[in-house]
Image 1 (cartoon, rainbow, N blue to C red):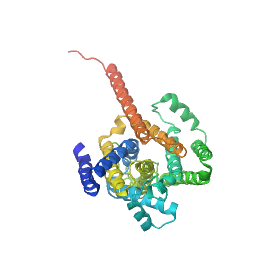
Image 2 (cartoon, one colour):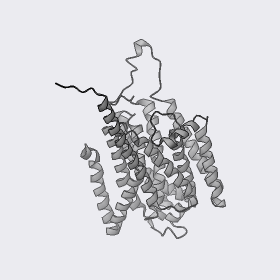
Image 3 (cartoon, rainbow, N blue to C red):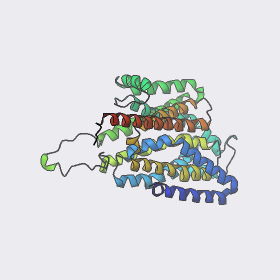
Image 4 (tube, rainbow, N blue to C red):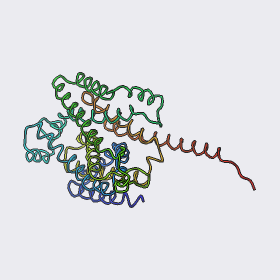
Length: 369
């Protein structure tokens, strides 16, 4: 199962490293490898969240995520997105932006590709930070039977009973970030943050319109014809419009998780080719393989706190993005915090499973011959 799932990732990683070597020698190869590790370390929480959504989708749409989705992740977020940001910020067309990118200028020098992208960081961080913060808040404010950090999650669940609680908290966080930022960026930050908030509300709202888990009334004669497809774990599998909306939602979430990686990459190199190879071909593909592995293994159902750990990591990443509007935070901290939450949640899940198994064993009657 492991080799079947990760085989392509290892093969393409080898190809990407070879391309990097022929492109720029040993230095390019090392930078490519570092960026790949950076992306993977930043994206453990992304894989968990993706897996929870992906397991609701039919095999066809799961394949779409692995094929069309990877093109969006690599070409869209790692190549086109930075070019668009630079083009808009510097008022230049995409061709000129690409030529500027290929010049590999020093990111500290004004007018270079890396410098312009870095200058756009406050708006990017506000958009991505608000989008991710809303994912975290909606998860924590929701009523649920299982709590991980109960001393924190139980009070948050009570706050969630207030109508519009996540929206109020999100707007308050955006207002604080905008007011604490440099005066010249305040308006841009607020606009970008509101855009992130609207994007979240739009994609989740459209997803609710095609909710595959919702109850639908069918005539008895039509019940069999309309019977939803289910997977081995009993989950309803989305098809048609429902699956398409889930696919769009998944891609938007995946893109939001990419913001910190794309921006952080320019602290390592400003070469768009190396960034595309490291973040895209190596990092993004491994994240997708990990997502598929979690779905096929049923890992999220077996280790029940992983969802919680992933969402705490999302909340931490959202906070870091908003803080980096004004503060410099090392990319190592950003990457490690997600890994720490995931490992802590995994450990807690294993302890819980052992405790439940021991309790069940104690209830079983002892039979003697």
